[in-house]
Structure formats: structure tokens, C-alpha cells
Image (tube, rainbow, N blue to C red; front, side, top):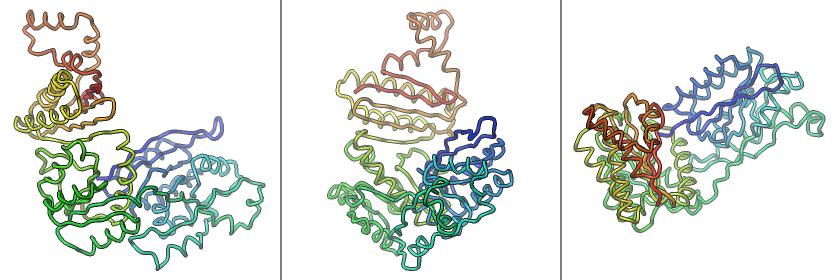
Length: 464
């Protein structure tokens, strides 16, 4: 499911005056992420900040519920005498807000610097507050988003500049002309004309025809198949950059598994579409994850935005990574064995020297055991999440359990002791301590060990 990250910073327009909070949004504001979005806005308001700037540079999508939150918090900050404004809004995101009429009152600025200037000008009285001077809609934007718009092709919205500074020639233009300036970031998606897309769905439908129109409008190479064997054959023929899979065609995850465990294929982005009300956590036992997923119902624009974001990401990842595998399993001995084998496969494909393979596998196996036994206390209701990343310089394994964590800093400090092993040995012999060598073993068998969170996230690295 597309995720949403929110990064917070503050900015003070004038020393001694109330500060402005800035939220940089990264991802999708949709049904799955709306709660986080609203909580972030609520926290910004309750913290007493006078104004709020939302940086939409990496916000790929916003649904109607997210837009309603913008309207509500715009009013709340206005009542406080401050302002809520948006910066770096991309065309597809801005279009939906414009069609609803949001651009008639909510300020859109070209970038964060322009938004800061705007907030300062409103605070100093050089610019009227937007709540008192509604912004008129951009007629050209209306015209290009009219009835001729095809759902499979993005409309082109002209990029316009932020409001000019007071005293400039453009600032002396008519109030109506100035109020129509709604800056939206140009939508430039280089390289999509060469994209290769494979869609796996049970049959041809209106939905698959819309997908075909969308991808062909980008001049990409699009293919539709209906079962896994045909998909694997076509995969070998076209080497796709992106695969969109209807879960009904791959209910057991066979296609995802076959692609992700092979080094030369694993960087292919896979997006899976799940039927309505699918509870992915409920049926999870041992699962190799696709890159992203959507659960019906979802808006078609959300899928288009996600697929194009993935098509842009894949070429960049291929310059950095050689392999990526993400899997999750419920705590059980059988699943532990599967996890061992999968990690061993990836490590053997990535490290050249047998000694390095043996050593790093021992470290990873120890980390998995600790996650199951000490983190999850072998509870079958808990799971372990594992990410394997291979780049030009190293193999990285990130293991996360659902336990409460531990005082890892205390145990890591003991590893720095020159006599760490002798002291551990003494505790085993004299105090009857069981274990006590796990962190030391992982340290000796890898080039870097790091804990994060409460101690339930372990990162191991081995140089290639």
C-alpha cells in the first residue's frame, strides 16, 4: 500500500513572533494514510503554531477526504490570524483540488521559499489574508481540464509563477489578473516513453483497457496476460520494468516469489491489486512482498500515480542496487527454516568468497533466531520482517521483530571491550548463563551491526 511520510520543521518569520510549522509530505494521502495526515495537521495546530506551510513536492496523490482536511485546517489557522498554504504542488494533485474549487481560497505557492515570503507578507499586512480576498480560479486551467479530458491521459496545466514582490511590474497588474496565478509544478516524467509494463489479470475488462490506454499514451511497451505461466514466458521476452498483478491471477504469490528471489530479476517493480476488504495481515504466514499494493476500492488516478512513480524509481535503483528482497513470516520453526534458506540464497548470490558467505550467513541466522526467540518470544501471533538489500559495495539485512526491544546500548558497549569473549565465557562457566554470545558473534561475522527503535530492529552489513 502506498505510504505517507511526514517530516516536520519550524521557521520563524520575525524574531519574537509566533513561528510557522512546515510539513514536508512524501507519498499518498489516501484512505490508508488519511489518519496520519490529519493527525499531523492536528498536532501542528495544537502545538500553537500560527501558520502552516505544506510542502507537496513529493506528495503524489490526495483524495477527497484529504482535501476536506485542508479546508478545515485552513479555517482553523485563519481564525488564529495565521495562514495555511501549499507549496510545490504537482499538476495531477493540483488538478483535483482545482476542480473542487479549493484554489479559489487556498494559497498555492511555487516553492517553500515563496510560501515563507507569502506568510511573512500576510503577517506584516503587505498582502491581504486569503480568507478575506478569495483567489479567483485560473480560466486557462479550467479550460484544459474540461470535458475533452481523457481518463488515460493527463491534462497539461500551464506552469505559472508565484506572486511577484510588491512594486514589481507584475505586482501592479490588475487584482483579477494577479489573483488568477496558481502555481503548479510542471509534470515532467522523463524516460517513461521507454517503459516496459506487464499486466497480469484474469481477463480483459474495461479496467485493463484503461491501463492499456494510459501506458500507451506514454509511448511505453504494454502487454496483458492472464495466467502465471504466460506471465513468466512474457517476462523473459520483454524484461519489464513494472508488473501490475491482479491477486486473483496470483493468489499464492507464485509470480512474485519467482521474480524476487532471482538476482537479475528482483529489481523489477511489482504492484499487486487485492480484492475488496482483503486483510493481508490475517492470512500472512510466509510472504515475499511485492514493491507496493492497493486494496480495492481505489481510485484509478491513485494506481496511475503509483505506477508512474515506480517507473521513475526503477532506473535509479538499478544504478545503486543489485538485488532487493522483502519478506515477512509468522513465528514458527518451519518459517524460520524458509527464512534461513532465502537469506542463504541471496547471500550466496552476492558474496564472492566462501568464507564471507559462511560468516555473514551465521550473523544473519543469529539475528533471525534472536528475533524469533528473544523478540517475539516464539509467539505464533507475531511476525518477523526482513529486508535484504544488495548494492555495489555491501549486502545489508534488516530484521525487525514485534517485541518490546532491549537495552542494546548496554550490550553493544560490552562488545567494545577487548576481553569481551573471555568475560562472556566466564559468565557462562561460573554463572551458568545460557547464551550471551549472540551480539558478539554477529559483530565478528559482519562488518557493521546497528540496532534502532527500541532495539527490535537489527541492521547487519557485509562488504562485498
